Length: 355
Image 1: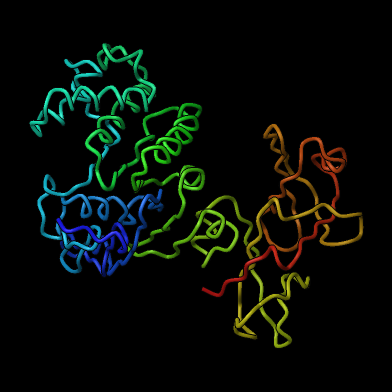
Image 2: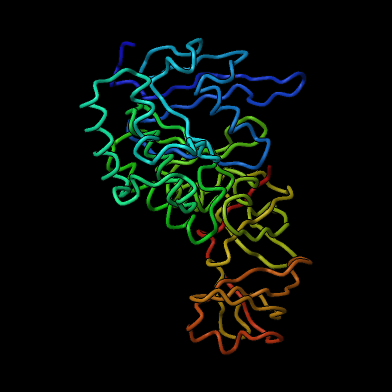
């Protein structure tokens, strides 16, 4: 394969995939950069796994092309593509030791024994598996199995490593640890990682960029900070993190109002005299002195260690607003269940949608 290092390492060009009458991927285009950790994020059925399988060669697109380092691989068999796919199930050989599992793929390529041995030792060290090299999968924990599966995928030195929900089988604490471990390994080995996940926190923690998918299309692609702080539409705003939505209307004077309250003025080119929804994160709502801001009553408090999530009933809508405050902050004493509070937020922290 001729490699063009100036081209994106992976380019997906207007790809379509249908299953009967269902369009799983709908004219999707995407460029992924060299050595990037890229996340495909979305709910079940959004097309992210189908897209990954087309990149890997296990599904054939009905339309469009896929290029790796400038070379068209759309019709190339999976085993001919210089990339590797790591499944959630790990699929380790139970009768082989960790060392043998790592060596197997290289042996199938008929590499010299000396090279196989050197690459296995290098990968054992990189993934911190030296002490486990002679154990079999039944003797490993879930996190250790995950590392072995990752090492086995990396040892073949693919141009791109594809990961399909790789942490889904792990408990929460181990999953958080392995998120950082995956990011560390990706930085060390310098290989492009593409991960499929429905876990928004996982994508935000690990990825350099995130593509949010819905109905086979990309709704937004950007850095974790961009998709979290500046969501492109209401779906992305609600899917990434916790978001309050306040229904209202933009008046002829270009002001947003809900239940008689003027809430924000930064409306850009949105339509006047039209309904709209204001989106605001819980951490961007502040408790203000009594009588200044939006009046509300605390109906519930959820303790989260370093912070507390307040549920505040207001006249703005039937559902309580969620407000995040520091657990040790001065406002906590007054923010108990049943307390009357005043809320406020800056226009710059809001997003307003008419989609």
